[in-house]
Image 1 (cartoon, one colour):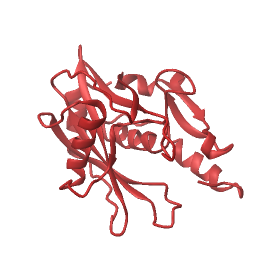
Image 2: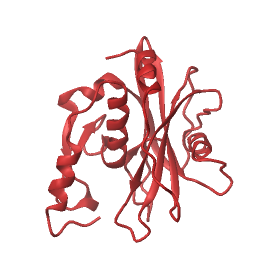
Image 3: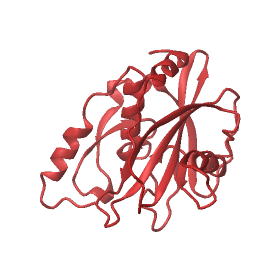
Length: 214
């Protein structure tokens, strides 16, 4: 696996996909990297179980909805990371926009536009979790490519549809899937270490079923 500085070089030539947010709600997440003993790590959070939250209990990157006081999607990612895990990104090295994806696209509004921003955090920082986060931890980037961690995952809200996932901790609890998995695909492809092309296959299988719902 490339060292973090090599990953950063790969990201320099990355061209992020953009989505028009006109008439839609917006959210931002922070893909936060650090390097420990020469090994790159990425921050994940486990969202707390909350009534009415469509991402309740999911593994995710820190982030949330853009508020009116946020000057940009980048500002929203920085603010949300500070609020959710107590980590300041104001002095972190900003590596750029990873891309934008649509969350819950079957909604009448066309879905939430989610922007992912990448940061390199030089200084270690202690987690201080708020009520929205059950757990936060760092995970080695090279282990995301371990095929033994690649699983098919189903969630209570997706019926019997199964999606590509990556096990990063306790089975059935710490599984990266859905929107976060798709952002990981973009990140690792830009870094020169792409994941297997499993997401499109899962989408085709899902929409081939008449009973599929979101």
